[in-house]
Length: 256
Ligand SMILES: [Zn+2]
Image: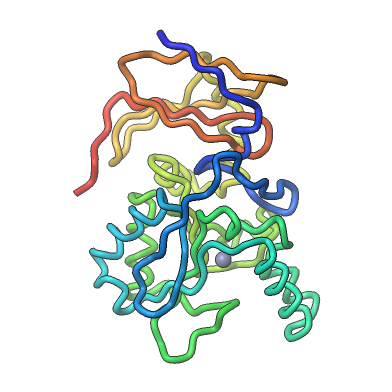
């Protein structure tokens, strides 16, 4: 048994942070390490932990020959600019449906990426990423690399964002698999895990990534004390709401 003290501000950091109109992004207390996604001429940045699995996945899909990275990390200022430009060019209704409020965009986390089928003309706000061909192959493989399609059509009333077939979010393994298997968007997954409190009733998941126990640990007012088992490896993420998601790996299979 080992105990770790998690400072309160860490609830705002990690792969599983929920960022939407209700839960704005707070600048990570640990800072952001951004790296360019290999994409030829365009400079698209992603958080380093998301960029690596994305490259592994893209290596299986022709290394960006048919898919283009349109937009990754954005500063709050860039998000404001995109929002203002869209208001001017596309009007209020379109903008509210398709562009996240400045301060509330997943793109500010560095964990989200917009992708497009590679063409000469690419729509920056609504790129074409169809449910066929290589784009669909990407979509089907994505969960095994920690990515989910973040704004499905049927969940627009929950996410507050209209259907965006092009926007993918890194949530890490095995969470993307669990969310996909249960058909949960991140808002629902964060709620679902509240029924699986750490040390009481963890959610046990056996999938391609391995066997893991996933659980919610509510944050204390100051430091939150986490007691861990030396036999397991752990990953810890804030939920950007009120606590932490603890993933304890019993066995882990690294994908080839
Ligand atoms: Zn996006």
